[in-house]
Length: 185
Image (cartoon, rainbow, N blue to C red; front, top):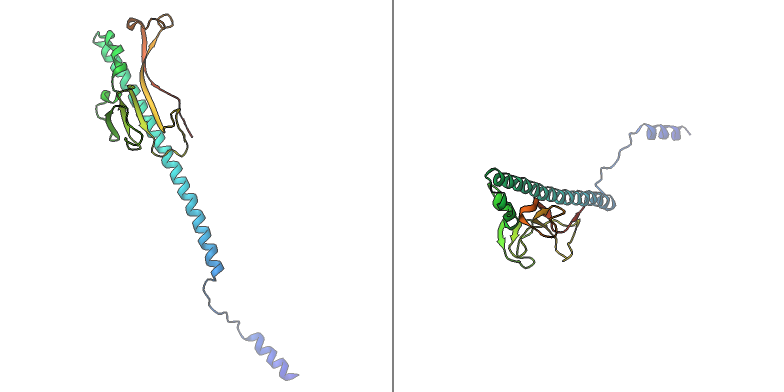
């Protein structure tokens, strides 16, 4: 019995030594799945914010063009050329800017789909529309023709009495308006 108690004491006193070991296959797979999930979420958020930034840049350019239109109207009124205001409806709004944006590809006549690179502006001579071709349109609803484009047009605004006659002398204003409302986000 004394032998047993001495043996038991030795066993209790001996430090427990653990073997160093690496990852098991299951642990490795769990880590890979977690990292992959985080990467997918990060990529999705990056694409979302990239699209939101594109929308903001497009709307900012439209606001700049509206300001340029008001300056054109003011210039004509200042120089006594009120009759020339109606001619603004035929102009390319990009021509009003001191410097055209880098993503403006110029004037086109009814370009075919895909002819103008995504993320660029162009002026359509056929319809007299300024067009932005959406690059990242995961949350953009296509227009009635199925295009992922936003179209603007310079329009004359007439008073209620002048609506039927469309008399240029009775113009109340000029606006840069959407040809068709769009839904983005």
